[in-house]
Length: 436
Ligand code: FHN
Image (cartoon, rainbow, N blue to C red; front, side):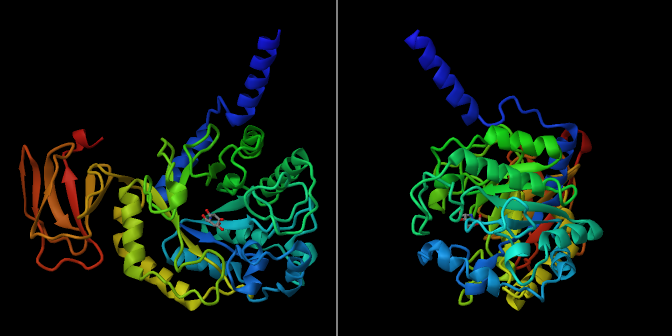
């Protein structure tokens, strides 16, 4: 009897832990995954009442601001200069195909018209409008998809209890009902999946604050897939994907990279991949952060991500008035100029067939392999054997033929004298049959 009971409890625990076990993505979901991988490039947006303090999105936790004080911020948040068309046009000008915006970050403040809690932009700010509504309409108008970032971690909600690794100085009473928090979270997700038309998906974050908690993610994932089967779910838990997830993200690292401590245990699954990165050193608006990456570095990061078969989600942290700083705008437009010339070597491609090398990466689409020479040290480049014979090789920019010799050891490319300081792209056309 005791043995049966123990087995039953273990089974019950394992069920909620195994997420959406038995999840079979629908045809619409699989099509959305293909679209996602073809898109390759998106805009990440970290925007919230924390922008008022200009000290990033973790300011409440980092400066141990109690809720009573932090709740003063919404009154100062009035983004009258916010223009959804301007944001979406900038993303489009950068060559981005989707936008992922923070609907709720760790501070618990909803950047949308939530009926589940009045701790939201419509009820608590002089702005009184729903920017996600405007963005959803504008994305549909301009042909981009909109994803919602949603923080499972919540430094404001009293029922986010027992507390996790963060948000312990918010001054909340030492009690709360975890099931009630999960109900609240699922109710807000139902709003996001119901009130904004078809969305691209949900980008979860914050699970790592309570990794041992029973998040009942199976229930949450089923809810999302029931309401919008095509919506793609990803969770930034820095672990192997759970059943029910549709894409896998890596933060500040290419898939499998380990430059960030939180990626130490990450494993690459078999789902579509995405790498997210800041343009300067901050996610949320930070008034003093000038660690801007150069346009060259941003383009090469995008190329390396594509070579690693991953999307690149590049972040902006808009200002509290709704405008995007010129340093971001300039870089995004310059990346867009490069994409308008070289996009065929990125959009609709998949990483490979040659794995990333110090000299660069490859991407492929149908019978074409794009060799992205990023750091060549010699006048010629030996490529390992390709899936099939090479019919022709030329520079993507200008079309000049590139001499090549093929042997059992691979293909030697004679590189042009003047290499492009950003990326010299050689288009290799292969015998069609073997390309597949
Ligand atoms: O804590 C968040 C952080 O604020 C930001 O949202 C990034 C974006 O990927 N994710 C978490 C840090 O891992």
